[in-house]
Length: 464
Image (tube, rainbow, N blue to C red; front, side, top):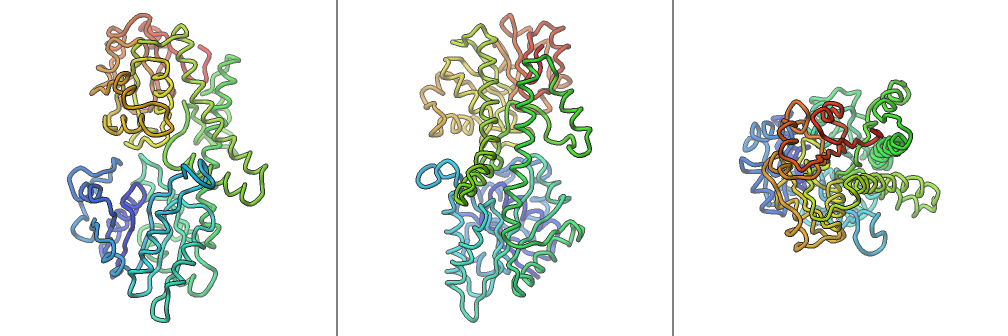
């Protein structure tokens, strides 16, 4: 019997350790968090995270070998392996503001482990962190070790994608486990390998040194985001020349050296990891006195912001250079389909800009609550306040409600229910002001069919 504790019940810790409990019935898994409301939600019928297939996994093992609790200390005492999966947001103030990760939660969790533990522990860095964060954790833990209590530290970055997290965890491309290159480090590494190989083929569990494991996570996200920014940069050229970005992406994707994945042009990438990890890489490069490397990676984020603003400017320009008092239906607020996560969503940037232009915005998203939308639009740095949001934004219960009386419809998230075979676009056209405009920010609609209905269609990466 092995006892696992996961500190942090968020998007990473919750699903990751729930899957371990689901796959290994003889391992007790306790997921802890200081947020009582979050733990209550994990213990309820309405989980705090929407992820396809997650409900079934949690409900199958909860109360058997999967537990959710706020009793952090007891979980630490009982555990053999401790995952640290707390939030590492980008710093808003101080040294490295806007780029560096705030590691305060990591340090707090590490110090708690050191203070509470009564037996030796394997501490596993699961949060996305800058390279060599494990060194700080190791320093804290070793300062509190004794001849009877030993702490070994591992790096086990997550590679799950929101919307497909359950499949990513049950059938991953790879699992990375980094350790110190010492006999004790290798022994600790093997214990975690033994957990994962219960359901994952041995060849997919990759062992390496601690620092390579940490950097691999940042590198993977940076390379994926780079592909998105690259195709988005080409989409601007396509619009100016008459080329079709879908055709260009398909042609490039058939090259076996390039491949088709992450070559879908859009209004821009979002989510909790891409921008944060790239900016961490930028900051790391600057701290290592590699300014050219920092500038290279920063350009990926610059292009993403440019793409979002280019799309919003196109909306205003197409609507006769003014959106004042015009109703804009925004379909989708999550950063991608099949998740309720809105972090760094392109919809936030779009809404902020349209509010400043005095538009009336009607928003519908099937999985994002009105409370979350208003919270995102009033966050510091977004550029809008509660009074402006209440005046300019309406949260709707359906796509049809959002589109009724609208001057324009904007697709911001590629939810399946927004596709041509799901929504009655003739009904939507009939309910809108004329001329009726559609702006497809996710390339999911059939523009010729919409034009046959009567819509004026604007699509990213296409000039007509």
